[in-house]
Structures are given as structure tokens and as C-alpha cells.
Image (cartoon, rainbow, N blue to C red; front, side, top):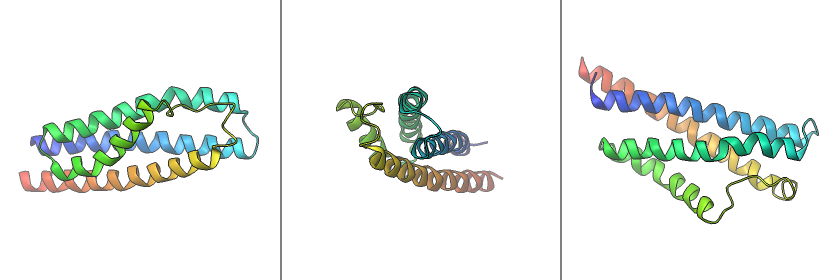
Length: 136
């Protein structure tokens, strides 16, 4: 198996994990909207996944950069830059006192990231299959 196939296999696995995390975020935010969960519980549950999700995505982008996958790197860089900006401005965590005021923004961001990770997952899957076919 070539290095290209390996990096995209890693991308598929990480992409699936990021997809599951974003679906978890959307489910919890919708639970807050219908009062199945209180804001403090929501923030405690989501905040433990915020930074790992961002760092895992940045690591995946770094792996693509190291392996010379320029299209995949260019595809991921805007989200990495957005996440880095959120971390630098200290706006990356969910705040229980502000959650109802910013719920629309968080929900929109979750759906956009969910769509991004879904498209990325299928792109990585396609490139992995392409690399495996080219190897044989």
C-alpha cells in the first residue's frame, strides 16, 4: 500500500470520527432547543470535545501537507484557519450563560462543519480508492 493510500485511509478514519462528533453536537444542541438537557450539561458535554476536534482536524491537515497532498491541504486550510482564529480570540468554548443567545450561531456552525466533514469524508474515500486502484 502506497503512502498516498495510507494517508487517505487515515483521512477516512479521522473523517468518520469527526462526522460522529459533529452529529453528536447537533443532537445535543437540538436537545437543548426542546429542553431535554439544561445549558450547563450541554456545555460540559460539548466543551470536552471542542479542542480535540480542532486539534485532530489540524493534525489531519498537517499530515496532508507533509505527504504532499496539496488539494486536500488547500481544502482543509480555511477551516483550520477559522478554528485557529476562534482559539486565539478565546471564542471556541460553549458558555452556559450565553448559550441561548448564541444558539443560532452554534447551530449554523455545527451544520456547516457537518457538511464540510461529510464532503471531506467522501473525497478522502474517493482518493483512497483511487490510490489503491493505481497501486495494483
